[in-house]
Amino acid sequence: MFSHLTDKLELAFKKLRGLGKISEANIRDSMREVRQALLEADVNFKVARDFVQSVQEKAIGTDVLKSIDPGQHIVKIVHDELVDLLGGKAFPLAPVDKSPTIYMVCGLQGSGKTTLVGKLALLHKRKNQKPLMVAADIYRPAAVKQLKVLADSIQVEHFYLEGKDPVEICRQAVKHAEKNFVDLVILDTAGRLHVDDELMTELEEIKKAVKPHEILLVADSMTGQDAVNVADAFHKRLNITGVVLSKLDGDARGGAALSIRKVTGCPIKLASVGEKLADLEPFHPDRLASRILGMGDIVTLVEKAQATIDTEKAEKLQEKLLKAKFDLEDFLDQMNQLKKMGPLESVLGMMPGMGKMLKGIKVDDRELERTAAIIKSMTLQERRNPKIIDGSRKKRIASGSGTSVQIVNQLLNQFFAMQRLFAQMGKKNFKGLPGNLMPFQG
Image 1 (cartoon, helix red, strand yellow):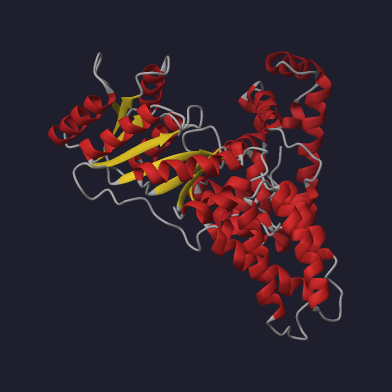
Image 2 (tube, rainbow, N blue to C red):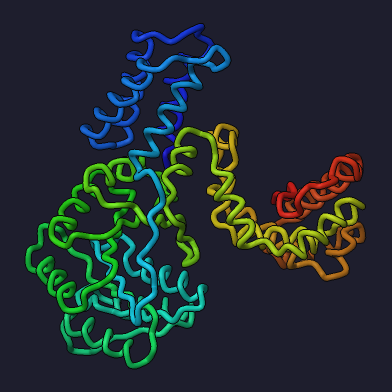
């Protein structure tokens, strides 16, 4: 997401770079392009207009230091305005400090509500809290079953009453939570159109019955301006406390993310960045602004690494790299840890400058899966000493992994080349390099 907007903004700023000074004329020219880029990204036209006006006023009203490139000066102003547009700071969820705390999840059908309920449950389970997933969607076929499957997959309790209406299900779920020392009740309400008065009234009745501490609206990032209109309508009826952007890892233009806070006044609290239940992140306006401007997001990358990388294994790997003694067993372990950090394209996109390098290149996570399948088709002896893999072994490995001898050869050649590279670089160049940042790629 945002790749098109990033490219357009980069072109607008490029014209200012190298100028001896910036004037009102060239600022207005570049801001015209910025406004066009925002509109093409499906940003609300009023939001785009106000944003450009604010940037223009600040750019014209400030002096540029001689040591600062005019283009960099504008980028800094745009970055600060983007941060402000996105909310200025991170807004945490309501604390789980009451017994029970209640989160109510609502939104359109297909926006990702039930999946979010599972993600929230997993998030709080990892904090050693006891969540309860409540199936209050009695209208969508298989909605109850989907929630049960998600709950079972993360070993979290779920609640449902056959033959009861959603209001009563939610009311009884809270009573059940009070009796069973549940820390967090997460209500999965039915998806509905914001123009459906009967179903919106049902949400109001649920709110009145259980008095949730957090009312989260799931806004599908792929729907653009429709997501903003939906958020505005839900907020007027329910006074929602926060927005969760789903499918932020998709290829939509990103207008919803940039408009929703300004139009509704509701903070964006979370971002769903993948299909796995662990792919849920706090929404940080400053980090997203940096990514939009092609600066990457090192802070989030480091946080992901710290949460998923085994420090002890990383230190052992570093020792092996220093001696150029790493093997395919280490290679497989590094790939497994990399996959835990999320989709590969998303992880690489957090690295400054990587967006430009990846432009036009489709990063396919299936390549990692294929590489892993090849290594897993080897014996332990072959992984630890790949040099013993001869023609007959390659045929067996190719057959076991569903690939070809040619692909097995490519993997082995890449691995041996990497070994030689590390041996040539020597101990001096690796001294102090963190193990979790070793340049392992599939």
